[in-house]
Image 1 (tube, one colour):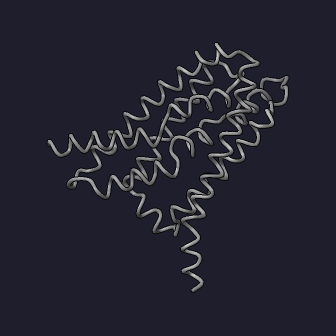
Image 2 (spheres, helix red, strand yellow):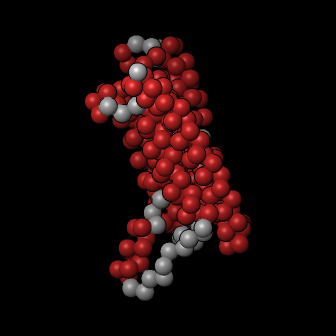
Length: 215
């Protein structure tokens, strides 16, 4: 029991650090500028549920999924970088949604503006680093029931992430419209840099495999 308790603390520390919900808060504010508090909270909730579910699936079945589909972690990193880069470009251009007049068009627009799953849940919260971390923790944990501390750590991390993202609304009110516009462009630039780093890391993992394949 003592071994599982200590490993739970290790797993929680590792997963919380790599998910890093604090760094997602300013990006979340920038991406949801102008949205109502209700919509922002709903996106935060769905993003955390989706992120926790994804990491749980990869913790339990990640090795089998990657092996079955022939996917490497390098390819996963590169794909995540592309997703982030597309979002970053929109943020840098400060693109706003088109004005809608009917209720149906407003609902359509709201769906298109939803950032809960992409890129908030994937790859900002549950990105390649998070996936790799939970898979490593599952492979090196103590005993058969290693999934309990790892899944528990995922749950606690995303509960904390949800409350942090909910608090982003308070920061949004302080910034105001002009502050949000500035933050959106600055965060867009930072997000682009993160995206490029994801892609570079992915290529770094893939190149040795490509070279070995051609030799």
